Image (tube, rainbow, N blue to C red; front, side):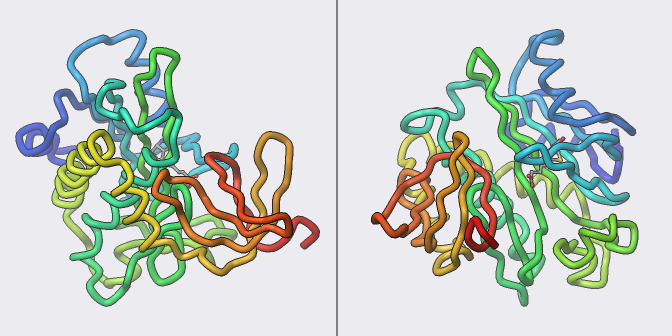
Length: 262
Ligand code: BTN
């Protein structure tokens, strides 16, 4: 079945996805995957793809814009596939970001890609993809990936036009959504294997791609704001901030550029 430019049969044949469903419109593929986790038990990974999301969600309560032609995908994964050292861990989100970078890089040879801890992939200094990892009470994981592929910024909300980008905008052509998704899922399977066996490899690779090093950042976590200069990503996936009281590590939180007063 081909849907939203995605050939689900090919994805099922060529990747580790065991079941797949396509929806023309959903509120959010993550919400649908969470519902399937309860109502439709079966083989995993389950992949949910939507052509359009009416309430796509990002981290920190942000909305995610699913412009026509973009990829909105969620995977429901068994806990044992995501067993990083110590959970919940930013390494899961970073592993997905690395898989996105691996899949997209060959399609963007003149635009180096980078990561913003813990869940953004950037190209040309603008956001190309976002990742939303949600953990169910039984430790199954939902990995939501929003990738700006064939969508156009002319359809984007005005506030995103200066900060987002799409593959189509950067290359002035359309891309094969199935090919991108297949590559992404294959790289993800490898990254999840590393996550289980050598999780520090994920942290080290993410650190190499971290674009925030040297920037002054403020992290909002647990009701506290901490400002400092980013010293990169540690092998355990934590964000390193050099603060007036020394270097601190963070495993979760919402980041802003600048100090808390700015
Ligand atoms: C972020 O940038 O904060 C994360 C964005 C994640 C968006 C994807 S699109 C597919 C999946 N469904 C959602 O509602 N969100 C994720």
